[in-house]
Image (cartoon, rainbow, N blue to C red; front, top):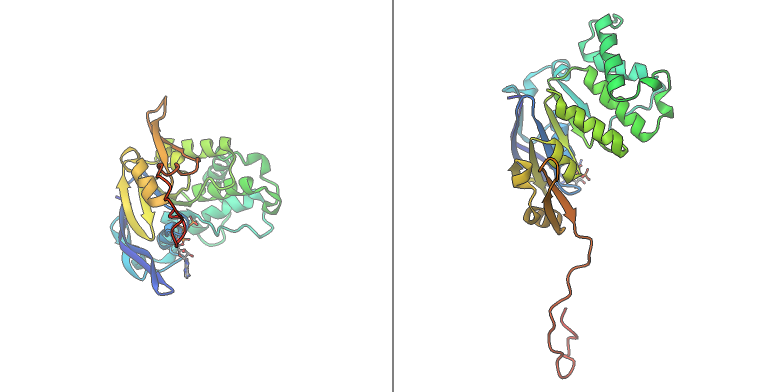
Length: 275
Ligand SMILES: Nc1ncnc2c1ncn2[C@@H]1O[C@H](COP(=O)(O)OP(=O)(O)OP(=O)(O)O)[C@@H](O)[C@H]1O
């Protein structure tokens, strides 16, 4: 077991943004956190990478309460790609990726050969090696996102926390990133908006609605039309992927069906027509 959330609660402005969330992410598994805008996904993730202190409850890493670890120690274990991951300093891509080694650094020593190799591998993996000497300030949104994932990988974390990792990525880079995660032995806790990508990449999905856990489990069991209607207010049909059999949602963009024919009243009622 790597990550356990135990009755995690975050309160602000007089309400619970995350409400008694309990969840486990097993070693080597990928757990996706899905839910509507504002349902508390980023807030929950922030508690895991210690940008936010929960009001109550706990985040356990291999059974140890995160708050009992020094920040440097938890930074060695947990790498995060966040909505707030910034790259506004005029560093090159290579320098930003190398910063992933910072929690492991002993004083001001230069990177070892092994660490330089790690950085090269991560840049190749994320298709940013050709940008190594470019300033991160000059990158497109998707290129920057890939550099930040490479930085998180070179940290060699026990747990990778990703907040919308496919943001800005074109479909090829989305597929590359997710298939890499799928094929790796990494332990990943990720917020995802795309339910179809979540179904394909996650071992388990957890659905948040208004800060509360609505459902958690195997994507095929959880991502049902009933749940999508209840949580997102959207009609969908679920079809098995023709090659993998994994559930894929097809959303219904049609307007709601017309009301059944009701005989018109003989004369208009004083309140006007009922809808
Ligand atoms: N410091 C704060 N004070 C008050 N409300 C906050 C604070 N931080 C976040 N919120 C609110 O908490 C709710 C949950 O926000 P959060 O960013 O966790 O949602 P999310 O599920 O990640 O949303 P999205 O899908 O839009 O990224 C939102 O309604 C947000 O406005």
